[in-house]
Image (tube, rainbow, N blue to C red; front, side, top):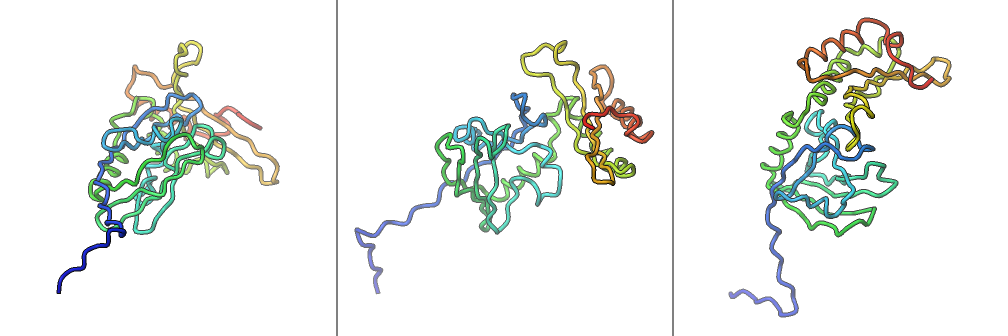
Length: 251
């Protein structure tokens, strides 16, 4: 029995696209309005393909890479998952965002079904990655601290201490966040002030009335080890009811 040749009108099966290499790069956003934490930027075969499709878009902040592996922004499973892969520094609902559907099929990770709600540029092609390389790169980027400046290290360490202490909950408060405050790009430090770590928390009144927001502005300098500065700032916050030692930001 011989094989039946394909009809001339029948399309030949297309070969799968070649496997790409994913690299995740930490970048400090240049925009003053952006999240002050570094974005974790996906590069494809060393090129910023996403920047071509969405020039104003930022990738997920490094703060989103601190939980378990299944919660990382680019984590994949056998079930397809539609994610925002880049969005502007305002909001996705304002200027649009770049979406992609990610999934794993055997030993291959696939990115497809691209959507640009801002219509800023041409959509990338379907991308396929070797699952082993892909997942190893996600783990490497999540653990990477080499990009940090002293300000970033101080903010990260202080946030870890405050979250683990549950100190604000003791006083009926909620920790809103910890952020590195950088100097505004191209603006002299004497106009923007020194580099600081901002700590924000909120206390809600039991009566249901509007609560009060508080904050600390903690100086970080280059003349002292970061760990020592963090220890001193943490001791100050954990020494007393934080509502007595922080500044009122919004009452």
